[in-house]
Image (cartoon, rainbow, N blue to C red; front, side):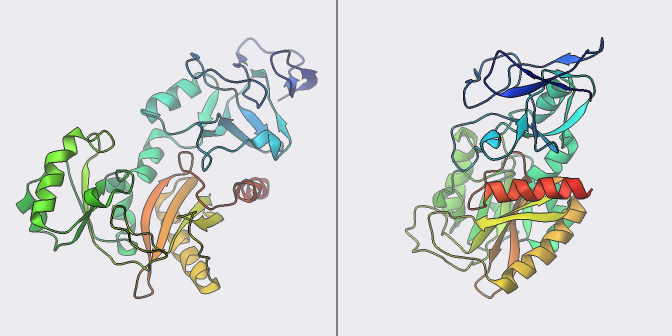
Amino acid sequence: MRWASGLDSRCSLQVLIPPGRSSNATLLPVPYSSSTKFRMNEPHPPSPTLVDDTLWVVWKPIGFAQYDFAFEEQFPCKHPIFLDQEITAVARMGSAQDYAQRFAEMLGWNIRLIHSPEEYERSSLLPNWYPAISEFTPRSVWFDSIPTVDQVSSQFEFPIFVKGERQTNQHLRSQSIIETSEDLRRLLDEWSSETILWWQRLVCREFVRLRPVAEDHGTTIPKSYEFRTFWFRGELVGVGRYWVAEKYDMYPRGLEQIREIGQVVAARLRVPFLVIDFAETCDGRWIVIECNDGQDSGYAGVNAREMWRKVIEGMRRW
C-alpha cells in the first residue's frame, strides 16, 4: 500500500492516508482507540489496526479484563482510513453469534479474517476437533438431539463429564460432573432451558481425575493443574495458568510435554491461530482439555503483550 502521513480528525491517533485512493478502495469506519468510544450498535465494525507494521487486528473492548488488550498502548500502531487491497486480520471482538456472517461482513470491508468459517468451527466445536486428536483427550461422544439416560449410561460409567460442544455452563459442577443416573436425568431435563447450553450439542466425556491446585468446594468444577496455550501457525506463543486466582506454575518437563503434544494437535487441526488447554492428570499424564479459536479466547494467565510480540516476530520470519 502507498501511504502518506496524516491525521484523522475523528481520532487523536496518527493514521495513514493514501496519496490517492483508487476507485475500488474501501473507506473504513472510525478507528477504535482509548480516546474514541466505538458504539456497539454501529452498522460497521471497528477499523483495522496495523500493529508494529506487521500484524493486522480488528479489535474492540468487551469489558472483560482477561480478553481485552489495548494494542496501541503496547505497540506502535497505525489506523488506515482507506484500504485499496484486501488484508488478512485477527479479530479480537469477542465471540460472534454467527461467525460466518461476521466473516462475510468483514470481507465486504476488504478485511479477510484469519480463519475461514470452516476453520473457525474446526477449532471451536468438539465434534470437529476431537476426531483428529482423540488419543490426546478423554473419550467423548456427542448427540445431535437430547439423549436418554440409557443412551448415555450404556456408553459410560459414572461419574461422567458433560458439556456443550463448545463450552460448559460457567464451570457449574452440577451440570458438568454427573455422578448418578438421577443427576443425569435432571441435567437432560434442564438442558433445553439453559441459556448457555440449549443451542449446543450435548457432549459426554470420560471423567479423568486431574491434579488439583485448590480445595474442592463442590459448587464448581474442581480447579486443576491446567494451562492455556496459544499457538500461531504451529508455534507455541503463550502459556499461562488457566485458573488465574490460584498460585501454581509450569515446570520444565511439563512444558516440553505440552509443546510436543501441542505441535501434533496444531498440525492436525491446521488453523493459524489456535488455543489448546492442557491439564495434568493425577497419574502424571498431560491431556488436552479443550481446543478453541484464538480470536475468541481469553488470555487467562498468559502474558498478552509477550504473546503478541512472539506472533509479530513469527510473522516477520514467515
